[in-house]
Image (tube, rainbow, N blue to C red):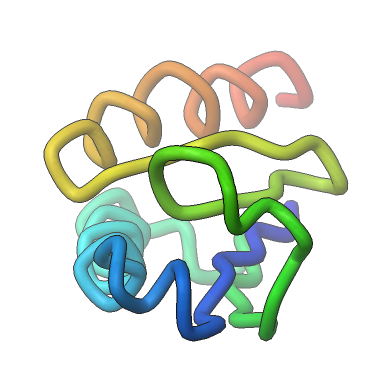
Length: 84
């Protein structure tokens, strides 16, 4: 699975650093380094939206630090369980 987090200036101001740190911690805690590739990308064209743009295998989501763990549990873990 590939997760891409926007780290462009707008998303940086919206907290992309926190989102990346939380996702990295959750990937590590769940032992998923071999199943998830966490990447950063500059502007993904969603600057006007609330939250940081995060893509999972090309599908876009808006994530904030406050809901990053819930996002991980509901979207990332769910997809991994569906594949497995």
